[in-house]
Amino acid sequence: MRIAPEGYPFIAVAWAILLVLAAGGWWIGALIWLPVAVWVVAFFRDPQREGPRGDEFLIAPADGKVVSVLHSIDEPDFHGQSVARVAIFMNVFNVHVNRYPASGTVTYRHDNPGRFFNAASEKASLENEQNSIGLETPRGKILVRQIAGLVARRIVTDDAEGARVTQGQRMGLIRFGSRVDLFIPQSAKILVSVGDRTKAGETVVATWT
Image (cartoon, rainbow, N blue to C red; front, top):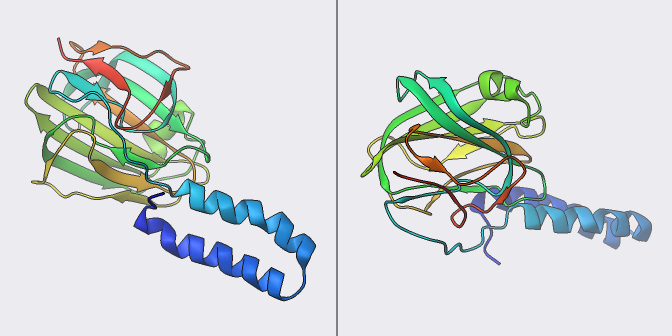
């Protein structure tokens, strides 16, 4: 199983605690801690993803549950107009590696420090710590926004402005519960609904029309 490098320090600490408990003969404590140590490893898993590829597809940027689909919302920072938005909430058991929905060039990046409301709430999209990545794709402009949640306190975004990226490529990671919003032109056809489950790099969330 491939592990995201950002997880190595957390995994080392979790398993060091387990070894200390076991070496000290605190077997009950070790047994209680063992599932936590295993969960930390699982949280930072970075599985290979093979899904539909092509300029006509917009692929899910995150594993999780669709918590909001809006067909008209203002997005002044990158698009400068009303767009559609699909919001995906990641719980602490989901894979937290994020992936690019389409191939293109990173032409916009904005890191915004903020607060830490529940990532599933609408307030989170406005006030929480977040990183926004704007892509110029062969079909048009899209924006991916990584949003921190109640537990998430660190957003990792891999690429700077000017980077060429490919569909399904790793985009970054958010630690310990969070949300990813995908902003796309209103002309795109959204294929998911609230309550649907998505897998980053695999699930087609929309197609260009």
